[in-house]
Image 1 (cartoon, one colour):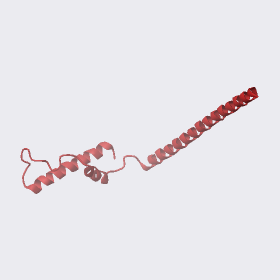
Image 2 (cartoon, one colour):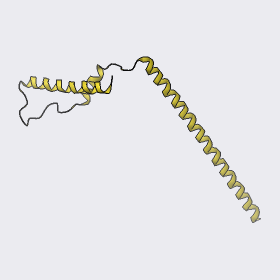
Image 3 (cartoon, one colour):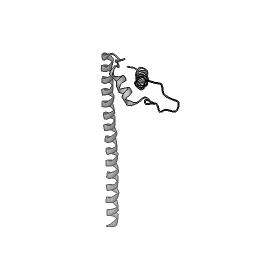
Image 4 (spheres, helix red, strand yellow):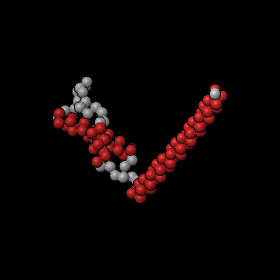
Length: 109
């Protein structure tokens, strides 16, 4: 279901609950009296979700799922490539340091 539909249903659930509380009291709220249902709560959204329908067909859900999987694989491949480049760079720096150390040792002898 669309987010708008869910929000509208949650609001209607809160209004319905408020009306039911008023009917149970047998009178409208007096001025300054606390409203028993002052806000839309998680409970109202939970109820709204129970009656929700999918707004995206199953075949499109599969397309989105496949696309998501492909993007994750690409991201992992890219991260692996970046890690390999960093490892290669570190190895080069280590080799350079070893060469410099060897040169310094030769000069010291």
